[in-house]
Length: 242
Image 1 (cartoon, helix red, strand yellow):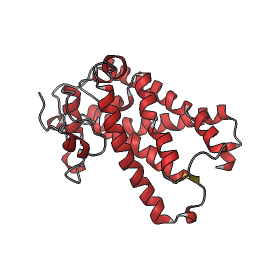
Image 2 (image 1 turned 180 degrees about the horizontal axis):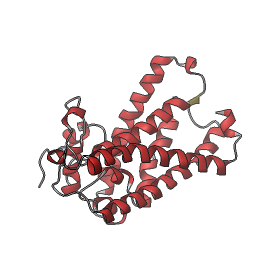
Image 3 (image 1 turned 135 degrees about the vertical axis):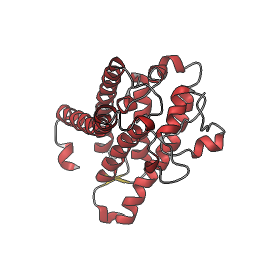
């Protein structure tokens, strides 16, 4: 971490942006090519909605996802300031807490993020905020992997808020945070696949592309990200489309 703090912030921003874009191109691009291009006939029975999204929609999803990643990477300036001032709960040696805690910290980040995501998602569905913040994402009613981060800039800022929550709340190692951010990108892309691949559901309360497709078609239900726990507890879970 010390070596990173010595790199000029602008170069760190460029580096982080490139890493995020490359990671997203791989995580979204591979399943898109697999399901929507090369396997569109082979896997058509798994498609949650009969039609494939139009090319114009895909390009919009890519455009807004790129804007989101630019906003995400711009947080580096504030995050570096907090690190330099010693405000966060960062630690640099894994042995300081041990490998069991290192693994547990990632699980804890996911649990905290799931709660954060559910309640932020509920908030931006409020009638006073929806059309200004979240309507853009819901215009993609037939989502593809590229729609995972196709947000309005205000929504991008709200979703980015999980990072300072984690940095201040949980003792975290640099590598754990990198793994967590990778999981965010991968899982958000997964629930936007638009295909019902049952083999990828490994436990009952796991949020799936089918669950999230219900949300894109009926915004009263299924606000969760990783799990359906909060939806079930709050009575906002549904398995059927309108």
